[in-house]
Amino acid sequence: MPKRKCAQRPASESEEDYVDNSDSSYDETSRAKVTQKTRKARKKGHENDGSPVVNSISGHPVSMHVISSVEPMRIALLEWYDRVHDARKMPWRKKFDPSLDVEGRAQRAYEVWISEIMLQQTQVATVIPYYNKWIAKFPTIRDLAASDIETVNSLWKGLGYYSRAARLLSAAQKVVKELHGRLPDNAKDMEAKIPGVGRYSAGAISSIAYNHCVPVLDGNVHRLLSRFTALHAQPKSKRTLDVLWAGAESFIKQSKHPGDINQALIELGSTVCAVRDPVCSDCPLRLWCKAYQRTQPTASQTGAVEADIEELCLVCDPIPFDEDNGSVTIYPMKAERKKPREELDSVNVIEWRSRDSRDRWFLLVRRPQGGLLAGLHEFPTLPNLSGVKASSTSNMAEIPYTLLQELLVQPPSSHSDKMPLKKLATSNSSYNVPEVIQVTSAGDVVHIFSHIKKTYRVQWVLLEGDELPQLRQTVSPDQGARENGNRAKNPKGKHKGSEVSEVELNTIPQTLSAQWVPLTQVLDANISTGVLKVWKLVEKLWATTQ
Image (cartoon, rainbow, N blue to C red; front, side):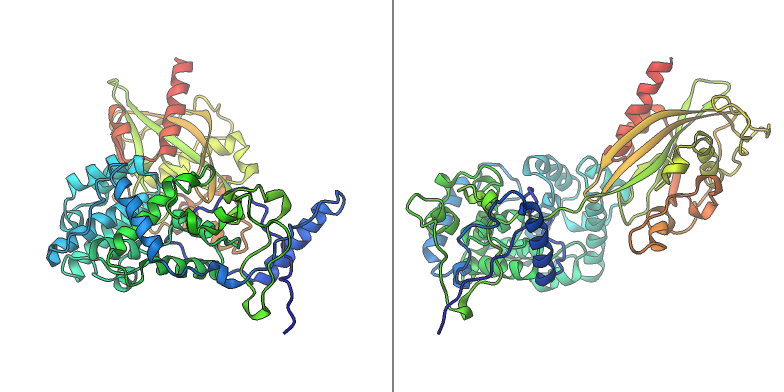
């Protein structure tokens, strides 16, 4: 049968390595569309400089990415892991104990579950003290289930990705209520029944706590196996992930120590097969690593490997010359990053002072249990302003009045546009109605989430009165209008900003509760890093104006 080479297809030009929280769902991108798009882009970029598009090593058999005869690899991997498994002093890392009863294994599953959720997008050194505090406070899943979001968030404070904490609490309550207080003892039920647990976490918990032969594929193992099999393909495509999951399964299939093997692969990817500076000389798998073999002086670097068309790999993209640096770091293929969307929020640090004392109180509202920064406290905020409205001084000064209308039982009346910004006295002189003394701009704070670049436009709002203003019992209905209301009307991503001058009550930030907090206790509240930046900016304003 005639033989032919694989068509040459350009690769992604992103310079960042693939990072994954391991439990995300991936949609397979149409190869035809991606290939056509990247080919056109690369052709345009090179059409005038004469640079070759790809190197000459393109065609190769799909068997190149299949891991077989794994027993020697397992032995080398486990011998290495025995030497290093305790090097980073992870309190959740323990050897599997076959003598544990059902309750004992369920307890181990709880410990592993907590550690795995904490480790999503977070470094080990950061997680260790948080894990220790968590287990001291919630030694069992029943202890966690009996807690509340305020207590949970107080332990999570500073760890980021706060929705993880809320999911842990809701999952624990579900386990106690519906599953007799024990996490499922198999990966299938773990993934199906426990909120926040995907295929990776289910595999890690089941293999480590129950010794089940279930594979894992987190960002570290993804990178390790991409190099081990010399897989240069779209990192998040379904076909790529299928190849890598199959490779991960090869290592643990019919193994007596699947938990140790999985932890060894994760540890190896994290500490040796690093993103930018891998230490191949320390790798126990380098003898079988195809990326390592390719970088050796004796490796053939010219001519394509020919294979029957039935055996030709259709997953990989060719490696561009400008990316072929002779190192294993050309694998995995660099992922294209989506640029975070940009949003502008008005954040109002609302302070109340008594006319008769020096007491200073600040208004905090709590975000809903779901979504971004779930359950955390923040200063009253109007999200996603339009640039035109945000640039208007009078519109920005009007925002606190709109927010206070929603938050206070007896709010101050809106000021007249003709009144000076720095000295805004309301016309209502009722005993219980606070007076807005001033609204002062403090500047901007930029805070970047994984998918959003937030600019917080900060104002200090000073209220004065005879009594601490009474707050409404409940603050409006659902969260929908807060972050997603405008987007729901613009499904194609063309988000309209809030019309500040025509703000209605049902368009302002919706919260679950509000409270006045003394000056000395603001930093003790469950606030995010972004809110902490806002607070420090206002403190700087006070220091410069006093």
